[in-house]
Amino acid sequence: MGRPSTGRLQPLLGVLLASVLAGLLPCSGRASDAAERPRPPQAPVQYFQSDPLACQPDAIRAAYKAHLQPFADQSPAVLAQLRRVQDDMTLASLKRCVQKGLLTRPQASVLFRELGLTLPGTVIPVTAPQPSPATAP
View (cartoon, one colour):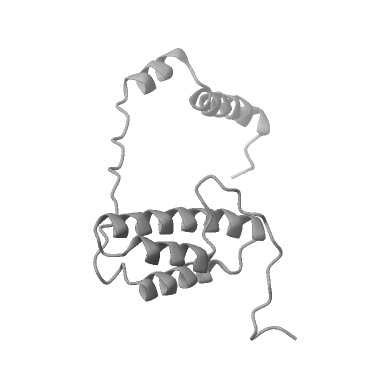
């Protein structure tokens, strides 16, 4: 039960290493297999269907203020990107509510100003996080 000599293991290790590398390196046969594979179907786009409760100004205000709270620990750059998405989604909701007659245009304009919404494509500046009143010195 002696220790196997390294001389007998070296050829085995070489074969093992070559087979692993061959599996990792692209080859012409594998590329054609990938090209024949069907692409996964795209997920259908679903739009939120506004209803009378969701279009109430107080509900929109509360939702806008609460949506970014779970991400308060993120960097200012991430928060700016999330805010851009949130503004776009809120503007789309306001538009649908007005189109369905569940919110008046003047109400939507007031909410736009109150919430400090920005138009799509507007870059939201990255700002340093502000301490919350509970954690301020």
